Length: 327
Ligand code: UT7
Image (cartoon, rainbow, N blue to C red; front, side):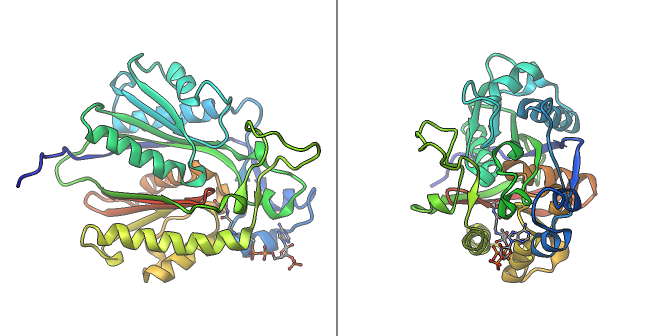
C-alpha cells in the first residue's frame, strides 16, 4: 500500500539575540553568597546576559527573527506560521507571537501562538511547526524561543539565580532542498513531577500571602532526570529511523549545565567534540537555549550540508523532547 508523499521541510535560516548586559559570576558573588569557583565547577557557567527594562521578550524575539529571516533569504510576507516558545511572556495575553507578528509586519493570515513547555519549549514548538507544515496548511514557519528568566528568579536564592540568563533564538522552517529535511521528532512529559521545577506565582492559582513566587527547583532530582530523559529520547529517536548515536554529526542540547552535557555524551558513547555548548556565556536561557546555540553553531561553521543534527531538551513539567534534522 503506498502512502501519500509528505514534502520535506527543514531549517532554512537561524538567528539569535541576547541582551547586551553581561553579568559575570564574580559580579553575582558581590550580592549573593556564591563564587565563580562554585558556579563554574558545578555548571560550566562563567557569565550570563541579563535583560533591562527595554529588552522585552518581544524585542529580543523580533531581533532574533529578523536575523533568521535574513539568513533564510526570506521576506516577512513569506511567513504564515509563527510560534513563540516561552514561559516568561511579556503579558498573560495577548500571546507574544501576536506582538512579534505586528513588529515584524507579518501578514494578517499568519497563525500566531505561544507555547509553554518551559526549557523544552523550543523542541515542542519545532515539532508542532513541522506537523503543521507537513499538513499542507502552512508553507514557511518562524519558530522562536525567547525568555526573560531574570524576571522569575529570586535574586537572593543562590541555588537558582546563578543558573539562568535571558535571550532569544529563532529558526525559519520551510521546504527542504533535496537530501535535507527534518527526520523525526519525539516529545513527552512525566506526570506528577510538578514540584521538581516550578514558578508557583503569576498564574491564576491564588498564593497564600508571603508564599514564594519565584522559580523553585530540586536541582539534584532534575539533574538525574535530565541525563536519563535526554539519553533515552535521543536513542528512541535514532532507533525509530534505524540510526545510532554514531550517525550524529552534532548534538545541540539544552544548555542547562555543562556537567549534564558531558554526562549525555558519555551515556550516548559520543566524543564531546560532537556537542555544541555555549552555556558558559549565557547560562540557562530556557526555551531560547537551543535556537541560540544552534545559531552560534551555524555561524561557527559546525554544521555541513548532509550532517545529521540532534536537538534534545528537558525542562519543567517535567517535559523532554528531541528532533533529528538532516542538515
Ligand atoms: O532547564 C532545567 C533547569 N534546571 C537544571 O538544569 C538544574 C539541574 N541541576 C543542576 O544543574 C545541579 O543540581 C545544580 C547546579 C543546580 C546544583 O549542583 P549540585 O552539584 O547538585 O549541588 P547541590 O544542590 O547538591 O548543592 C551542593 C552544595 C549545597 O551545600 P551543602 O548543603 O552541601 O552544604 C548547596 O547549598 O552547594 C551549595 N550551593 C551553593 N554554593 C555556592 C548551592 N548553590 C550554590 C551556589 N554557590 N550558587
